[in-house]
Amino acid sequence: ALMRRLFLIRHGLPAFPEAEKMCIGSTDLPLSPTGRLQACLLAETLRGISFGGVFCSRLERSRPTAEFLDPEPICLPGLEEMHAGDWDGLTFRQIRQRWPALFALRGRDPSAAIPGSEPLERGGARFLTAVEQALSLREGDIAIVAHATVNRSLICHALGLPPAQGRRFPLDYCAYCVFEYEGGSFSLRPEDINLPARPPLTDALCRDLLEAAGLPENTRQHCEAVSREAVRIGAALNEAGLGLDLPLIRRAGLLHDIGRGGAGHEALGAAWIRALGYEREADIIARHHELGSLAPDEAAAVYLADKTVKEDLIIPLEARFAASLEKCSGGEARAAWQRRLGEALRLRDMINKICGKEIIA
Image (cartoon, rainbow, N blue to C red):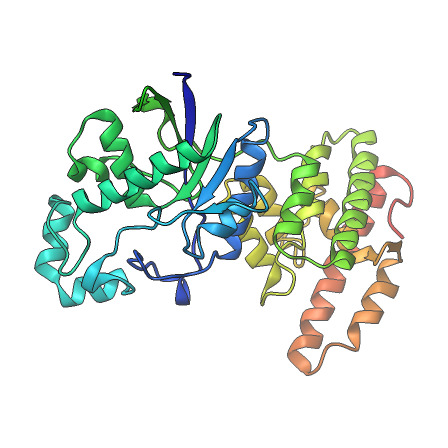
């Protein structure tokens, strides 16, 4: 029999109500925005692999993750997460309050049963049957987007460990494990467990992330225009001897409005990009609306580009601010507007002076 590979993937981060972690086995939550972005990174990470089939469970956090790998994944019964009994759908805070002794015991001994839950052995056998069915339905390497507990059960099966040992293996959202399957048996190297989906952040991937975030075309075009203008400002500063990171400026410019549509979009977008592991871009995104310091750095280039680009036209700073004044209702909003205008003008004058010519009008 030919050796085949199984890419076993955990779904992306679910949309927990009030962002509070819950025990979700059968509880059906959709993907969060961060989860969609993680799935986009997963697709980029596995782009070079030709899958004979991509499979998912029926749960709403599994299918959308799988759709980033294949627009029409095969939904297979038996791939669902194990049912967590009386704990299913409760927050861990609620669980700790209602079952303090059992919660503490499970911290020490994961095999301690949750009342009414699917037994580990039975859930593991059910999942193994479904995985073998997936392998029989398609040839070549396959991908399965499933869930933490069932994925751990297959890890234990491949390594010859009892199912209760599964909690030894951390499994991050959208991380994957690579199993080899040959002659009806699974094998797995320890270094192929919980592989991260964190590819290099290219310009093309930035654009894919904007699309995954559901941004409309006009916002994506604005991001492109801001990115171009920010790079132009950065290049002028580099000619004056500053040594800024132009690719970083380009990426942060492309992503600066990824949180647009949410409240406090700059903090929201920064939180998403930071959760994906791209700290430097996240820091610039967090400051593109209000810079907070006057330094001619990468963040300043993106900040000023955002303040002078309207749609894809470059507009003088005062004119751009004048157009936004009418949106300010009340004294507090006007004071904030005045503060931001002063900050932007001081930064513009500093950069023009460093460059020895008018770089920004």
